[in-house]
Image 1 (cartoon, rainbow, N blue to C red):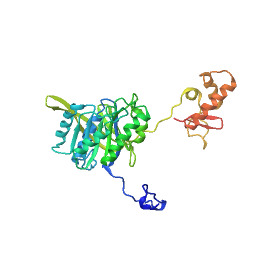
Image 2: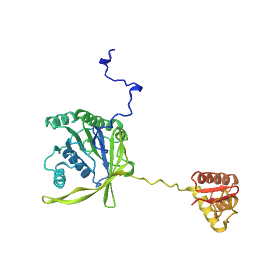
Image 3: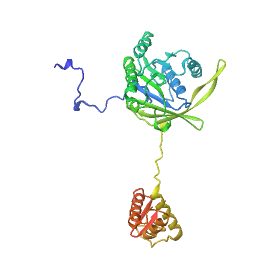
Image 4: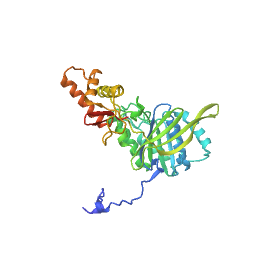
Length: 350
């Protein structure tokens, strides 16, 4: 077959270039230029306010948390808030000093999920009819409201939404951003099937902690993730009611996660506590040597084992069962560097 007739280009190993340009972004460091992204969080965390500010910054080419944006048309599908979203957008627009920008609202909820009839084609046609210059971002708020009757836990059913969202993104060469909920355990990420997590190019987790809101980039397929920034929500008046606007507090920085400290449990905890007790009661400092830290009190392994047995190390009085339990506890404590041993000496590592 003539190479000009091929649909799929094959790239040779020798043709790969490590100096290829960085992937294009809609928001530098924070959002890919095209693809599927998600902003998720529990109710009341501020994810809609965060999404509105993101969309307005892109539409007006304003920095988003200090990061440069590419001026693009934005369509915000307010499927959950409906007409009520208008006041939130007005408040954000006035607070940011935006008087004219290619930002468009849709207040009806299209069906992009498993249940038929599906509105994906109609949504594309209606957006296309507006002839938005350089349309670059479509925000779907929320995923649940644009997938009525869809089982979020079903890979097959949620897969229909993923396919539709990716189709919209490809059609407009834009990024589609779904605003989604977490499950009962906020730390476990987005609600429903992990298929959505597997399909996204970018994910933001918005949380509220101690009166301050945080947004953490938990996934960036072609860039640095684990960036985190903070914001507050200020109450403002709009007509005869109130709403909130985002106030940026800190710019994106790598979130430092403290290392988890291993803690003994079960029989291992019994053995460790027994060691601390017997050291406190009759531990002695051995002669100086190169194996035991200076001025460290130790006890014999036999003394520790006997005290651990009294503390209930094993449920059985059988010597063999006690030996097995003691060996396992000793091994775990050594592996996790909670004890030191030399010859018949043992001591806790605090």
